[in-house]
Length: 281
Length: 112
Image (cartoon, rainbow over all chains, first blue to last red; front, top):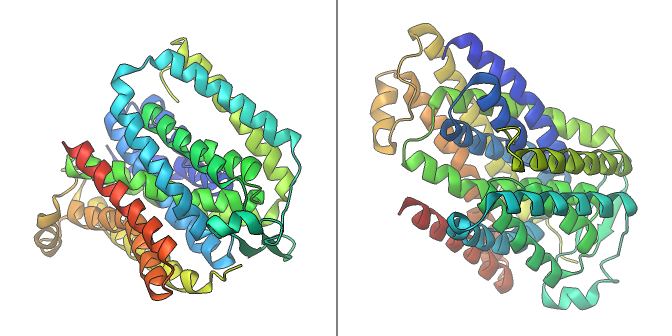
């Protein structure tokens, strides 16, 4: 791998970092096809680099989101319990499942999630509205919207539903290697009434912890290509910074539409992949 | 509602310094690779990182940066756990411990 290729990879990966940081997703969806289809890198090395890229997206953007209070750390840890449990379960049963059926199911889920996101406008509950739920675990939080500078207090509901769905999200990412953030954001926003930007920042915080496991295993086996991973990480860091600026530039409603569109595109790519027309995604 | 300030004061520096240090190390490794030439591209095992860095071996610098980067998610959960312990927030001490346990379990299962 020569220097120019590495530079090009770093530059292209800024887009993955920017979209990932803005939408609360990992960017593996962009990095893996980019490396395998664009640069002919083996799947194993690409997945390793993408895991490092996901952590870079998470760490790079969370530096800013935690400072702004957009990241709800308690909520992130609460949901992370069931996500990791789900991903372990998913990885264990992955060999026994039919990938085509899974891909089709996943794409249906994406379309449904996109539809529910589009149908819904921002629903906000004060911490007092959610006092009953807070008796179980108090996840209410406050953030300052980076665009309008408004201070927003919100309560979090639907705890059981949220836990159940994030274990499904974790399981799917264990089975298919994608989809962590894509499921977490709608779950938090639609089922738990978390404001969209807070949901994205919280998902961004979580994906780093989810990718951690895979990254440790890959490092332990020596599957990481040092130059490739560093190029991806450097590009993604730059992109994540851009993503946090975009988060401040656009309104929740604009980002909501973009996220729903992303879900539809991913669903389509999954269908195409299910029928074996394309090796990426 | 409980304020998140204590958590932010601990977690944010972990994230920032993790990012800054790993960026510096990876950048140095990349520059050295540019000068010396990209030969061996594999990551270096943990125990060989210090000696490799003393020998000015580019992959050792890159690996040090990557290891630091990979460690930041773990460090942020540990940092949060310390805050919850300090605040005697038992529910969240339990929640953070569960997350850490799950990560350990997943790594052990994956390594097997």
